[in-house]
Length: 624
Image (tube, rainbow, N blue to C red; front, side):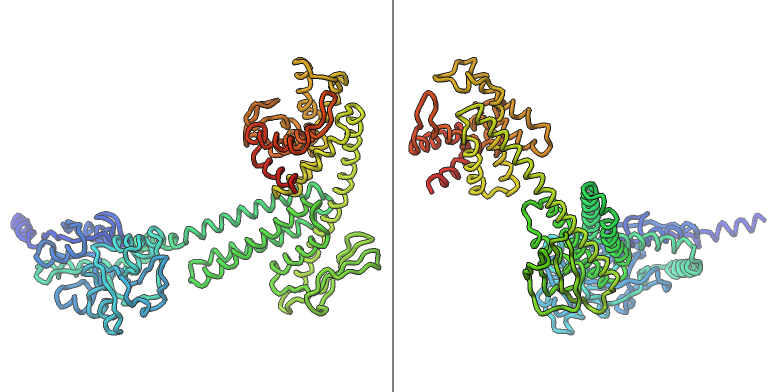
């Protein structure tokens, strides 16, 4: 037994050797000595086989030099070619296969190899895809007579960085690196791919232990590949799965998120509308369901996006169309809220235009308005009578006849459901418009009664409120303000002195100057008017405008001392008009100033008492 032990001890050094392996940064194949496809599989094999080994980390060109001068024994993750086989030895069993892909930045439009003419192309020094006679792009372009300028780098990462900074116009990297890093550097793969190769371990020919190492590596790789649950497939799946996930572009993720937000906004507006039209709840839900179906189609297309680039383009187009549909419907919803300023004809035409966009293949030819079953008006006529006719009956006295055509391939039931939903939306619009007219008429009657009462209470205010309201509207129109806001300015002009109803008559109609105490009482009328109106929801903005119509642009006004743009625009306009009408009106203690003096007073106080912007519009109107 002692002799056997002695023989084992003597023979052990013959089978003990240390392997120096060169590795370079090439994710996901090599990241560092412990991370990446090659290091993790090699560590697994060598640890199981009890083989001593060291990793030497450097750039790929430097590792080639070290292999040639004998500083290292092998290099991991090297593509096989006949040219390299003449100078080095390789193991036989492939770790994985790979090929080259040409990438470009977003400023380029490279569709084929001939588009590379006169381009700056980044390549990895000593890379098989660059210099190799059989697989290198340099030799391939020369055969086609394509002239390019090659820029050499020491890493694939350097190529992508230069490409993203527009220092080069194209770059050649291997497929796995491109998949993992293209999103990080915002670069785009072209359709130019070439040279599929086996990726192996490369040894220097004079390394004595290479046959043993190659045999060990090949045997372990074959055994690992036979078992689909082996450590080899676990590593490959982990890195390749990560790559596939990262293929999804970030802009598409944002696009989907924006689409979902738009859908949520539409649903919110939809439920707000339901509170106003509870009797039509079921019909509006049907419209929402149609939009939900379209959104489900978008999500289904997104799940298939990784299969091929054509599906990506199709999904992008579908997504754009859906967004436009949602925007059109949201605009229609907002139009329902602005019934005061939109006619029935305009709203029905907008419905038809929306139908044309949502339903490809839908074309309306003619729209006819019929009132009292006798007054017939052609609202729109595109061509001769279409194949289909629908009647949109808004009331007993008003209806529309729509002539249209649809493609035969469209499902008739779907078209019918959509048309019914849009009929309901038109009826809702008509009903709200009529209710708004009634409400507005009642509100105007109440306001006229209050103004009449105020004029009886204070003889100075006779015609003053109407003058202020009319001139304020003219200024607002000159400033191109919104129609709904102009309407509020008109009401604020009528009601701006309503607080004077609670000011004693002996102060309001006093002959001669007011005392300080009397002036303080007069100054309360904006607050009184504000308190009278603020609790009415539809008059809140008007109440605020009334409260601040005696503020000054320089901040020296009352009641709150607001300054500049801090004063509501409505109050700024009424302030100028109120002062103008006061100067042009005979008072108990003075005669009217006259037009020229009053204009000069307004101009001199621009930027002090009055807003310069409002004064500019006022002067233009007065001088016309």
